[in-house]
Amino acid sequence: MRIYLIHHGNAANAGTANFEEDAQRQLSVKGHDKMIMIASALKTLGVKPNLIVTSPYVHSVQTAQILKKVLKCREELAINHALVPLGNADDLIGEINEKFNVDELFLVGHEPCLSSLIGRLTAGTPNLLVTQKYGWVCCLSIDDLRMQRVAIMEWLLTPKILSHIVWPST
Image (cartoon, rainbow, N blue to C red; front, side, top):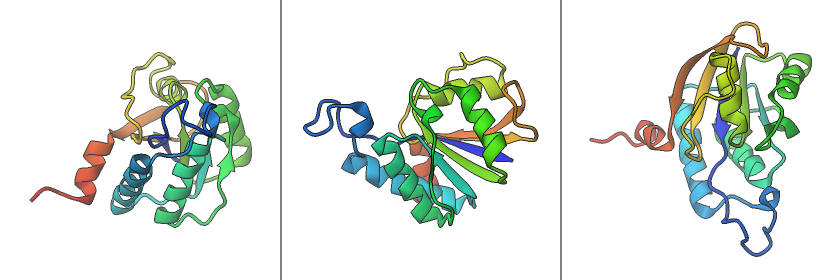
């Protein structure tokens, strides 16, 4: 199984009118455009998710919708509260094992939840430091998903690196 962890796109600034709560903030125009570019780069890389699971926060759902559209994922988005910023990775892993039997799974969420999950699955510790850029994508390869050191990090790409996949310099 491959799991792709994706940090949501840039959201409207905290405190912006109509978006007082973090969960209500929408993607900014910059975040929307950047996620289209990131999804296009993933398509160029041949990534084809069977399922996309996202945090319930609006900007994460919008990020997941862009990925679904560009990558032509047929399944409906799944919402999982364990992908919120302080989500419980144990609950997430349990639900993935219980409900989803797929080859390629996208998890769209927040920091520090995603970094903690990467740390637990690759190094056996939730304290692994991972880049904090909005839109980074990490690909993990896993044979038997459990909450311990079971994954190999195949790659972690920032939006800047992904932009060179879509628009290589000449």
